[in-house]
Length: 73
Image (cartoon, rainbow, N blue to C red; front, side, top):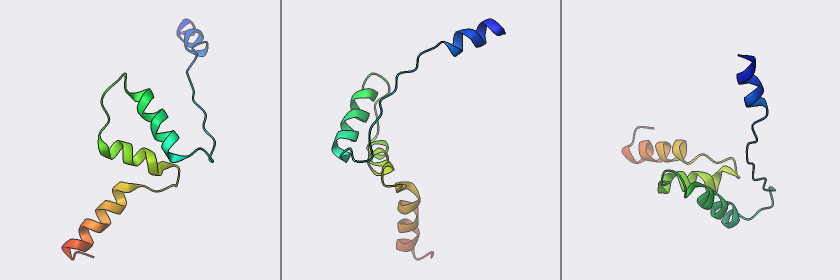
């Protein structure tokens, strides 16, 4: 077990640090570039990434709008 812990504790994790002042366009570009090597991102995932800097969560907002349109709330 200690061998596993030692291996993990020395593992270097790549990090990209962006300031709060970084324009959304730049954040989206970084996010898109980093994720191109893996699974393709959906439009919703990209939109979520764009608004994450503003502490805005699209899913609850979309759910509320859907229910309002249906006359539920």
